[in-house]
Amino acid sequence: MLDKIISFDQDFFLAINQGLSNPVFDWLLPILRNPYTWSPLYLFLIIFFIKHYGKTGVLIVACTLATFGISDATSSHLIKKSVKRVRPCNDVVFKEQVNLRARCGSGFSFTSSHATNHFAMAFFWIVLFRRKWKHTLWLCILWAASIGFSQIYVGVHYPLDILCGAILGTLIGLGTGYLFKRFYPKFFEHNQINKTQVIHE
Image 1 (tube, rainbow, N blue to C red):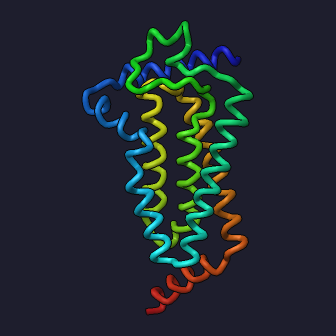
Image 2 (tube, one colour):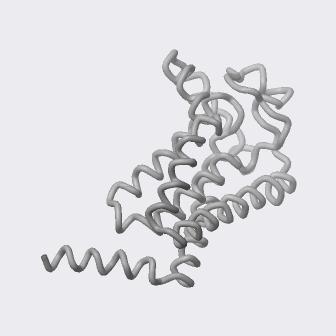
């Protein structure tokens, strides 16, 4: 059973890594998976949260960092070091079939920390802001999913690494989001009051 899953995962990987090859993806997706690409977004969000929400914004930033820390520790240290799956670009048998479009890295493959971390932050923000800004859900999922997909395309992760990382990150993000909601309900009550006022007006 496990052999069939691994075989399917490799075939799915090749369908993306080789089958979807095109000049646009070759240029764009390595950029999307580079953490430095998103530095201006992170800086903007930090400034926005603090400027717009004050002390609560500082708490949101701190909880975002905590969410990232939990997801990264779980994926990079707990799961990867336990499963020890070799990356497709480092597999001595499989790597000849891989179109490598980024540095391979020496770490293990399962689960993808890129996917885990970004889905964790995405769903933390979704819990906090989806009722305030209607586009939060799809923007956050699209952002995290594009980063995860790019990891397959550039040749450093299998699809199953991304899928399981996304599931893990989603659970962590929902967990920290609802903990925030549990211990700081006033933030959500304020949003609900504003929504009720708009309806009555």
